[in-house]
Image 1 (cartoon, rainbow over the protein chains, first blue to last red):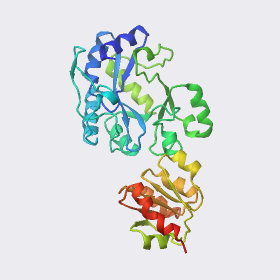
Image 2 (cartoon, chains in turn green, red; image 1 turned 90 degrees about the vertical axis):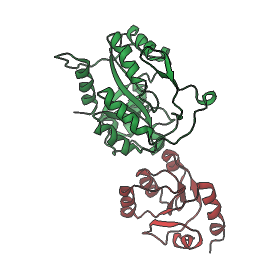
Image 3 (cartoon, each protein chain N blue to C red; image 1 turned 45 degrees about the vertical axis):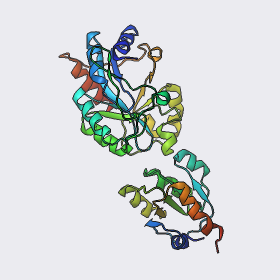
Length: 223
Length: 112
């Protein structure tokens, strides 16, 4: 996947707002912004962070600057382990013309020394929103790792892959019924990108993609 | 063996020791709290590197005799506070889990 073909696939599938959340990196977001804007999509810059507890957390930001500032911060908290492409795959940094421009040395797969509470504070401070990823999946899901859906940090949303599995979890973890549910494709391949089956109303006058981004994040923050 | 006796036998730091007479019967090692919750037994010493506050909740729920933080990990202040409130003993060791368990093995085997 490249930012260009993600944007292209998203457009073909009728999506209007698309978040790019590479594992532990926001470095491809500038290229994604350029490609998304060409096709009239609203890009959301983000990251799927692996916390110190090995929990995956989706982080979304209102601006590229905020996302890249968080990316810089997370870079300082990651142990220096070199990537082994034959095991973990290639880590490709893509430039604005959708061509590879580099490969980060540090392995992006491993966790930063940032706890769920610290991650929440750092993302919130930058105007973003973060929430536990794929809570209906055992690997790296918050419920398996912490044994419950915690009250603290005070998450305002969660992500799941199947609405039905989240319905079932909501019976055990009551908090899930009181916060926003994000059902997303968590696409790791172009063919995983869903069609536009969900929609929400966002007041966007006077129109700017920036306004939509801010309103979407405010909505997920429960504001 | 009592937690207080274990502290004399093995080099461990007492982070919270509000229940020094708690008896240790067996050891459990694990970090995924959902697993720990379903596998911990009452009076276990629980060796973990997980430092989320919920460690205290799970330890209390499972009535462990103590939590032993391995590999130099530390609990955040609110978790230490929660351990005090719930009278959950918390010990800490610099040793990684395997070496720590080896060090625990003899003293616990020769319990008085």
